Amino acid sequence: MATIPTQARSKQLRACLLCSIIQHPMDFRKNGCPNCEELMQMKGSPDRISVCTTTYFDGIIAVIDAEASWVARWQRTSKYVRGMYAVRVKGRIPEDVEAELESRGIKYRPRDQSDQD
Image (cartoon, rainbow, N blue to C red):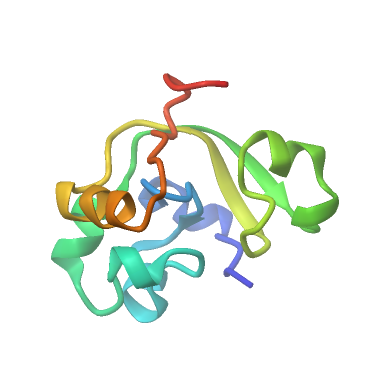
């Protein structure tokens, strides 16, 4: 389960470019991304956090029971941990991460809603 960000730190929040979870940069640094750390490798790396997350996102969704939530299914977050997620995230994942996804047979869909089904 991801840490729920507090109101006081809201201006510093960042969203993961791959899964759109919203956390404080220190949480990404301490624990990495709770959904996609294997690919993003942000834990302990401020440089990686700056290229794999963004402060440019719209809307926030609180996901409590991801598998039962129609919103989580619509946002493609139903297999992720509970937490706060951005509705739309501006930016793209780094090329090395996109290449790794492709090598695993996973199609990358940007979270800016430009590639909707």
